[in-house]
Image (spheres, rainbow, N blue to C red):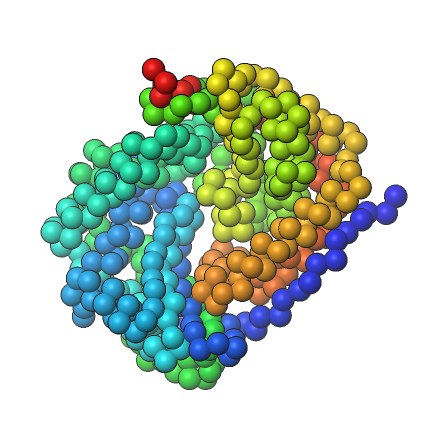
Length: 436
């Protein structure tokens, strides 16, 4: 039988690329439909890059990049962006750290000056460091320590699935490691990873390409040239037998479980990787999805269920090694073993029988809708293109992703499901302590 494929609309966002003499890669994607710009700078450093004894340092350094720069005092970045009617933020991921602004298009030069200024050097002082260590510790208290299911599963599952420090450690960091960080550590981290040759600048929206190029050369051209560091090999062997562990969450009112399976390399084996991205959605996206229909609606074995590729939930901004994750919350007295057995049954059924009529096309249409929506705004487009340039040297892949998702076949999804065997799974159970 011929493979059935969804017909997905394509985008045609323009892409202009060039590299400055100092190694900074630049991506421009003009869109004159509204007087708004998005500016993003992505550095090729993330949680996996942290040295042992300095857990949480990539995230801590992201905070330090907002504490003043070579020519600007503390809080000046905030004032200049908000004073122009813009918004800004930054975030730390497994494989990169980003900084970004959305502004009226007449503030383009302002945004470029701000990003170039801190690329030359943030204000790394003892006062700023100690202040931001306290801020990060409070963030950990709010998001992890004092929240039910805090860190589940993105912090709690990697140590079960992986063996090496870069892949397994706590990306938020321990208080001991954070408190022992020094200004010298921060300066070394900046020199090593925040080089112009280790960064990508992307600008999207209401820009004239020639004018934007001139402004970028004016503000970034004299940033001192430093080459990108050699990226370590973070790969490690796949599991050959099931790993399973549990812990008690004193704040959690109900049990929960999460499982993960390694998937093909998203960069070097993208064609084999894509079916797993689609498979995760086939299993869990929407009331008609396989596992939601079985576990939530029919068996009532779980109260909620989610599935995705990549520990932070975005399959197109992660490098190897990564995984397909399934997570579920159970009702009082729920049976975790039964949930895992049911997942295995449904994976076997999918691998044997394939998808039902219309099941794959419905899932692909929903995925394409999400991809198109997420890049409709100029900042979303600039950010995604910056990451695609950083990781693949191909920002134009953004235009192809919806189509490529739609070209995944029934047979590819079946083959992917057949690899998700119990002996390749790592799982973690949350034992509720909140009712005690």
